[in-house]
Length: 98
Image 1: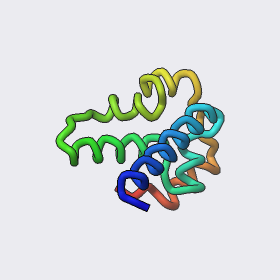
Image 2 (image 1 turned 135 degrees about the vertical axis):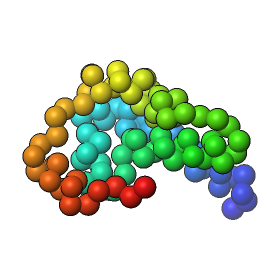
Image 3 (image 1 turned 60 degrees about the horizontal axis):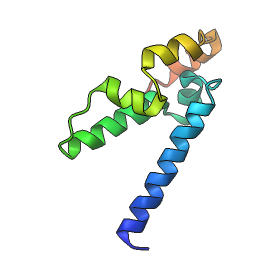
Image 4 (image 1 turned 180 degrees about the vertical axis):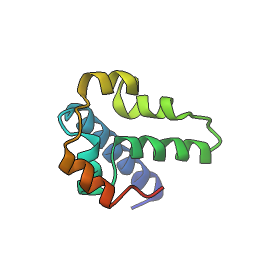
């Protein structure tokens, strides 16, 4: 497979992942972190880091809006639930790597 095709397939898979996460508003970020070690905020951070590496300025909020499909504050108000004590405890056992 040539490099261009690989890049296009990776981009399509990323877009589908973001679309899936936008549809699954019932899945909380803390649950993603506890199960997979990443969440929507991680994806947006990685997106911003990739942009910055290419000389494209992008702040955290702009990257989050790309991943969430709306301002992060709006998503939180609409969809974010209080994390259970169990979820918080599991998260505290294995905090995210930076």
